[in-house]
Length: 250
Image 1 (cartoon, rainbow, N blue to C red):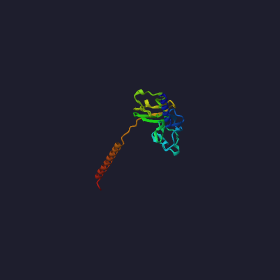
Image 2: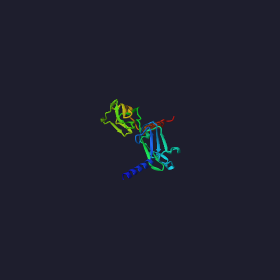
Image 3: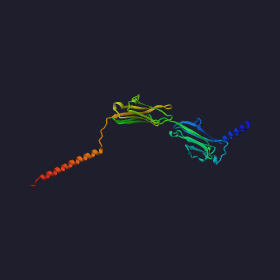
């Protein structure tokens, strides 16, 4: 009984080995996770197990997030290679699958973990009128995710005053200022982003609070001017007619 079980297990392992494809990568992956950075070049090679007979049904197919990749005929046989160049942010989380054309259950997959920093390190000039609202925004999309802190004039911003509000959805971090006042809100703000891989970076905002400009509605103002002008013109015409009537011919 022990011998028969051993033989059965041996046959099972043999069958599993025959029906298999594997993916090799450069650089090397950890398990089925390939960690890399933007602008790098990646090479994936799918290999048929030696036990698989070459045939049309045993051709290799590649899929990127479920969409089939077009391959040259000579790149579908016992070895099939893909080159990803350059790696971009959009490649993060992408899954490549290599499988047999005739048996999709015979497959191997690899997932990309693309690391990249947020697109920051710049300065913006921001002008806001007294008592108006303003929003400062930072693009913080990054892998790995970053932490965010807001500073004003080099000091950590006190968010308890009630005139500030922060939001962070993992893609954009925002600082909202309500009813700006020159003596309170004017200054240099810094959106400080801290990455465990890329260090500290951020965006600077030079916020200038200007005097509030009184604005009059253009439409009603123009209409009022027209009415006044028309009244003056009619008054002058009426006055002229009255004067003419008073003048007697010689």
